[in-house]
Image (tube, rainbow, N blue to C red; front, top):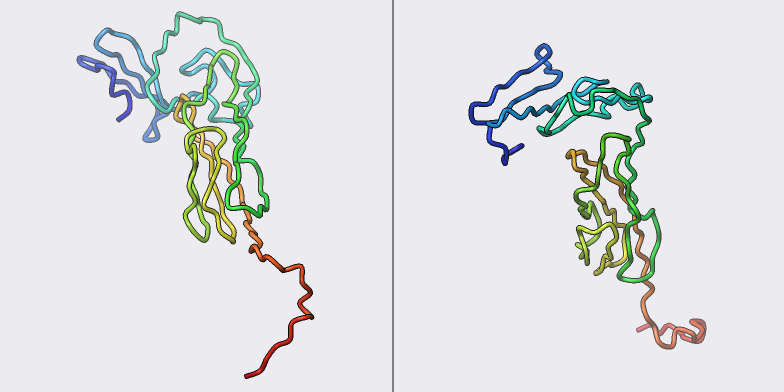
Amino acid sequence: MIARNIDWTNGRFTSVGNSFTFYNGASDHNDSFYVWGRSKSFVSINVASNDESLYPNTFDRLWPQHYCPLCTPTGSYSDFTLPAVHCGGNKTVNTSSTTLGGNDTAASQPGYGFTIASTQWTQKSGPNTAAFTASTNKNTSVTGLINGTYVFKKEVTDNNFGVWADSATITVNITASCPGCWIRKSSFKRKHL
């Protein structure tokens, strides 16, 4: 399913590494070169991360991407910043609906752009099935909540098919409406039959 819009007719495939392939390359029918797989410092992109020991998978390419080694022949070092996904945090509500979400950021690497491609909300657990008003937006409302504990998950995918997620626990404690509950309970007497 990867690279299904690329015509590999008469293409040439290469791989580097042992049984655990380090990276792959291929030429399409126009002789344009694509790479994917592991991408350590300067292997398939002319950028290396200053903090690569902390984030060794910074430049991994999960699908074939066009590569022009002569377009940017000078390599450079820059700092890699992890992506951030915000589900909204744990909270307790006393209504049958609430809002979830927050601003998300893709991984940041100067010279190698990442963007958020899609967002998906799901319910992981709860006493019943809640409904999302916007299950593919960064913020959403959930409705149909009843008393109990729910866990909701927000999953973000970037333009390199990298996936990050966050979850939030929502405790619902809806107090039943009771007209006349202001009357002291002690004024009622239990009748034994």
